[in-house]
Image (cartoon, rainbow, N blue to C red):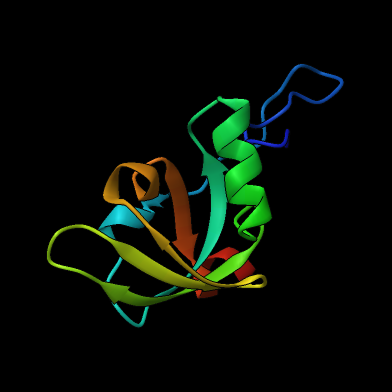
Length: 100
């Protein structure tokens, strides 16, 4: 995987099988998810998310989903509140499914 979580082909030019994902913006309070991919390719956004502890492979606990779209998660770097447009760029899988 590259820093965005995009798959990299192996020596036979085969891509690894991608599991089912959903956007962080659709998560519910109390969900535990693993970041699989970050859709935006902009350096500034990636640096911000990385500094906030949000990178592919990181587990997040969804603490709150505000009615106006703000998603608050617990990350290794602490609590982070993300606007819906940013949360919609983050592809996740349920933590239990990701461990399988």
